[in-house]
Image (cartoon, rainbow, N blue to C red; front, top):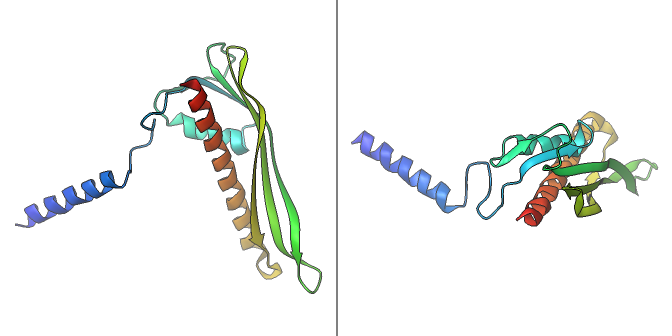
Length: 163
């Protein structure tokens, strides 16, 4: 009796996962595999996150050296900036705007699929001098999230053009 109940719970859980659209990592339905891909850029920031996400994707083989058959994604600039948008009564920063700017291009066999373009993300974060360390960790996590979003957007655009 307990086995039947456990089996029924397992099956209903799997059906719920399938019904909500969950899927294993890899190529999405209707998304073309990218094939050979070369990421040009720093070993940190958005370029590193692009490499990380492609390393586990099906239908993708990362190459390090120049290969004319490879889709080349070049991260030309990856900058993070801060702008004060609110001050406290004592004249200290109370709220910042974090700006993440990524310049990139995508080339295939010597021609531009996506000419040099810029993606920019902006987020606001409150700031408190009494919790500097935790706010810096929060800002670092926010910057990484914006870089992941930029990497995902670049990959979606490249996959759409590769179809």
